[in-house]
Amino acid sequence: MKNYALFILAACFAQHASAHITLEQTSANAGAYQKLTFKVGHGCEGSGTNNITVHLPDGVMGAKPMPKPGWKINIVTEALAKAYQSHGKTISKDVTEISWNEGLLPDAYYDEFSIHVKLPDTPGKLYFKVTQLCEKGRLDWIEIPKDGQSGQDLKAPAPMLEVTTKAPVNGTHQH
Image: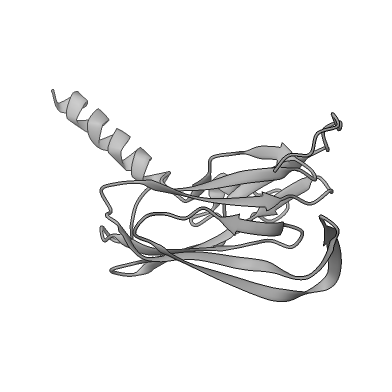
């Protein structure tokens, strides 16, 4: 019985230790329109989450958040260093940050926060820095691995998306 109790305790600790903010998707095609879902597994110090802010990396375009009942959305846009074309329009300002706030996600539950974006045409890793504010405290999921370092070695890793080689075009335009 003692071994069983230790097993349960170890399993609970392992779950809590790995409960970061993560992306449901681990990879997506370069240049694609993509839904990105950020999974929030816990609050801060046992208290509920009342704000999630996603900072968009350079090259991610046209971000649109999915509304959540009971939460307000704040969108920050900034002037771009280089404008781009989208659906026949020149885009010179774009979304750089999206926040869901004034809601409450109790620590005992998890939830998901989604955005729709156009990914860059260049393959590589994209890191989305996320700030989580709670009734007590905050967690900054902003660490990015250095060369040769594993993301598993980080205490507060930023969610990462692997952008892969662009898929062949099949003649359809999808969002």
